Image (cartoon, rainbow, N blue to C red; front, side):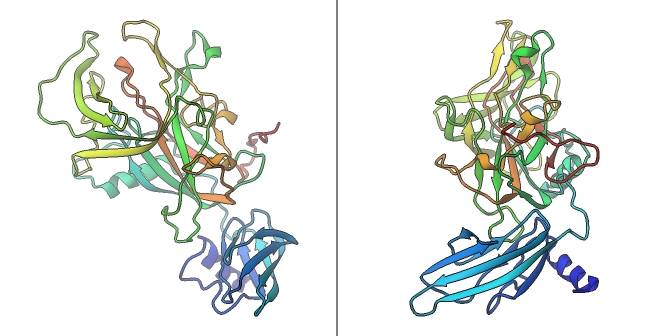
Length: 401
C-alpha cells in the first residue's frame, strides 16, 4: 500500500470507528490497516448459533460483533468461526496496526461535560462572566485542563463532576497503571506521615465507547478504590441542592461563615443540611449558567475524612484514603494518583474487563463540611495516559512491583 492510500485510511480511522465508515458491509475484508489505539468495528453479515473470534490463535470473543483494538504496532491474524449446523463459516484475515500519522497527545484533548455541585470556588474555577452559557463554561474547562495547561477547576460539593477524554483509546494493560490525574491535595507539615492535610477525594468512573459514536453515552463503571467495599461507603447515594432564595443570613461564632444556611440540600438517607457561605468567597456558589433551581447528583459516597483537631471549628485536617481517588494525595506521589482500568466494577460491584477506555468522569466523593475550610470539593488540573511515552519522564512502575 502506498503512503497516500494509507494516509486516507488513517485519517478516516484516526478518531475511532464511526457510522460513516463502513468497516463491514456484506462481509469482512481480507486486509485492514489501522493506527494503534484505534478501534476496528467488525460486523459480519452472516449469522449462526455460536461465534468465535481469534487473534493470533487466541480466542478473544464469543459475540457476533467484535471490536479489535491494539496498542502495539504489528501484524495480527484474525479468525472468525461461525458455528452453525446449516451454515458453518470460517474466515481468516489480516490486520496491520501502524503508528499514527499524527502523534497522540498523552493529555486530555476534550471535555464533554462539566456539572459542578454548589461550592465556594464555583463560578471562579473556571470564572463565570456575565452572559456565559454552558457551552462557554465547557470551553473554559477544556482550555483549563487539556494538554499541559494545569489550570485548576473545581467540582464543588458532593457529586459535582467533569467528563473528559483523550485523542485515542487508553489501553488497559494488565498489571500496570493506565492513567494519572492531578489535583491539589497536600499533607500538613506537622505530621506528614499521617497523610492528613487537604485530601478531597474524587471518585473515578470510566467508559468504553462500544457503540463507536464518539460521545460518552455507553455504560459507566466505577474504579473501585481502597474504600469501595468498606461498609461505611454508601452506594446508590443521592443528593439534591436547591438554589438559594431570599433569606436572612445566619453567621457563626467563628467569624468565618457569614451565612450558614446559604444553599439547602437533602439526600437519600433522609439527612438535610446547607452549603454555608464564608467570608473568603463572596460570589454566588450555585452555578450561574444553570437555569433550574435544583441540582441532583448520585453515586457512591465515601465516609467523612475530616477531623477538627481544635474542637472549635478552626483547624480541620482531611486525611487521605489509601488509593484509588483523585485529589487524595499530593501530586509528587505518582503511584497514588494513578489508576488501573482493571479496577472497574459494574453497578453491583462485580469486576468487569475492559480492553480500554475512551471517557473518564471524576466526581466529588464526600458530602462533608469543615468549618471555615468549607465544603470538601475535588479539584483537578490535568490527566495523562501513562502508555504514551514522554521523553525523559519515567512512567509509574507496574502494580505488582
